Image (cartoon, rainbow, N blue to C red; front, side, top):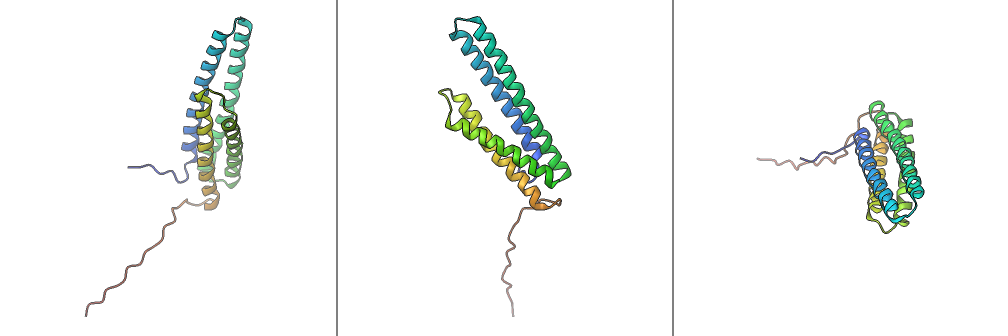
Length: 153
């Protein structure tokens, strides 16, 4: 039984928030440990750790704001909030694309960029469907097939 999300931007942004936070936390730990092992200076190690913590906080706050916008768009079915969510996900898409084009030799930033691009497209599509529904219910469009009537004489 597959779960189909038709308008649940809140659930989609929750998945994005948790996964991106965990992946960036792992990337920050890997980067900090690698910097501390390879450098002879303890000041560069401490500086890298502080920088990684700051970077992680900024990313967490940004994706937390998108998470709140996703739930607000889902609950209120607001056109304006959905548009803001699409713009925020557009920024995530561009940053993910930049990461894909300029990835380092490490695989973790590449995975993060791919995930950011994929989830931003997915969430923007869900928000677009909310806009198209104009505050109403999001429905899957299906074509009605008419059967030929058989006449028995």
